[in-house]
Image (tube, rainbow, N blue to C red; front, side, top):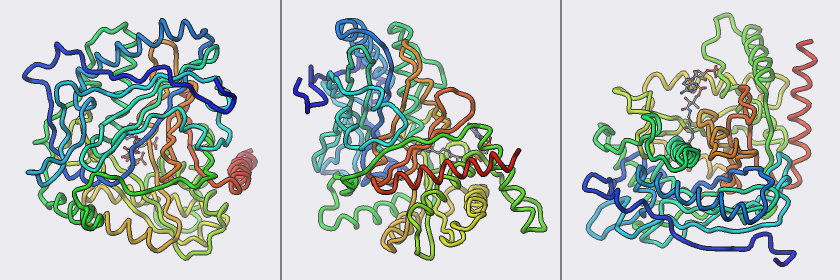
Length: 462
Ligand SMILES: CC(C)(COP(=O)(O)OP(=O)(O)OC[C@H]1O[C@@H](n2cnc3c(N)ncnc32)[C@H](O)[C@@H]1OP(=O)(O)O)[C@@H](O)C(=O)NCCC(=O)NCCSC(=O)CC(=O)O
């Protein structure tokens, strides 16, 4: 292997669902709902799961690889649309997800001698270094695969599973469910049954659209693509050439300490009781967001935060938690940038986030019609628009294929969106991992603000 070449492709193949399972009840074609259409122009999501193992190359190739491939093929029995494509038929007003006999998930198997520990560590690394371990979704204007995979073997260090997934077809909750299903079947040596919590429900009739959000999303997104409105190509989002990915942690104790402080700040300034729930999510995002605002020393009047909300349990009637597809909406908040930079900036941000979450109780889809224009108008304003990807609820550190928990889970696609990435923590002790993408010159300031803020809370508590 050339010194400068961090990966060598060993094999490019296709993994198809086990053929005997394609009976008449298999779900081979899925119409998009308004929830799916919302994501039509967004880039695919890309994650890496690193597993530390000291096995030599022969064991990785002869033992681990066949198990991963076989279990993957069995898992596709339950998730057949994943082997298909998003396609836009000439006689149809919107794209559909279609599986045709012979379709399969592209799998690249590669080998690397790159530094596994450094790649799977928490310190800032160039995002482009991680792209070597990810597959691409080879998209055309009329057809985009739902998913692609890459398995990279690191002899005497471990292996890495990377995927690219089309967000128009399913949301983070369902991608996580698929990964847990695959791991569970692999761990049980290919035993094909899945628990109810891991079995997807494909029934599209349970998604109701009384306000015709489909029309609003089609008009908003297709019009934005001008004459080429039927193209399935994504918005052209690129990562800055010096994008750096780093991971920060808040322990359960850190979160509790900041939470108490946020509550105390509220009591200082208000006569009424707390009007929102200072959840782990609100506290974590407020803390990381304010570090970013301070790092960038923003002079704009407003800063904006867009976060994703899982609608399944919030709709009336609720949608089953295992519904396959997208079932998320967005929530955008605007906060005074100068206030966020003051001493109690984290409390101000946490109040705004907490109150926006509380507001979802009035109807999770209340502002959904205006979501796309609202988001685009904030982007055009040019101030900071931060967003959040992932969720600790996906419990991705429990994705165990039979060789233990991942040593690291990384969402690399935040390099283009600039989003914060939230995940459970590897030790499972209730802490949160926050993936951050910054330009090289910002990394030191952010890391220093993050650490000094925690030190402030530690000293204050003692
Ligand atoms: C809108 C939210 C972020 C707000 O979260 P909050 O935790 O602040 O608020 P909440 O009302 O949901 O929960 C309040 C309290 O109940 C607990 N709680 C409620 N439901 C829970 C559940 N299912 N699992 C675990 N805890 C739960 C919370 O921990 C919290 O307690 P405590 O005080 O202990 O915290 C969330 O509700 C949500 O929808 N999360 C999922 C977002 C999502 O799907 N993101 C991925 C997008 S797709 C994507 O990005 C692509 C990809 O990932 O691949």
